[in-house]
Amino acid sequence: MSGRQMSASLRLAAAGMTLAFSVVIGAGFGYWLDGRYKTTWWTPVFAVLGVIAGFRELIRAVNAANRADDEERARRRRSAEEGDGD
Figure (tube, helix red, strand yellow):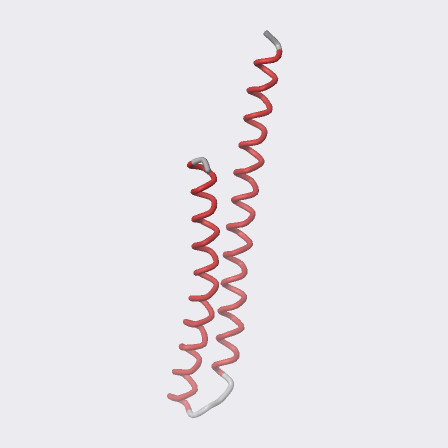
């Protein structure tokens, strides 16, 4: 595995952790608000917001990894074409 592939893998793993932490933090904050204001609806609201934020980051990381992979493939293709032209 090249350094670039490792970097992309680590970014995707971090994005997955961000998804999990976003949900936990959102639900925790909602739970705290529910306890403070004696309500029951803040927890699901902030849990859903955490899911949305986490998936947004996950999609951004996947798109960045795909873009980096496309750039690497294009670079390799150009380098192979330059080698064939000699």
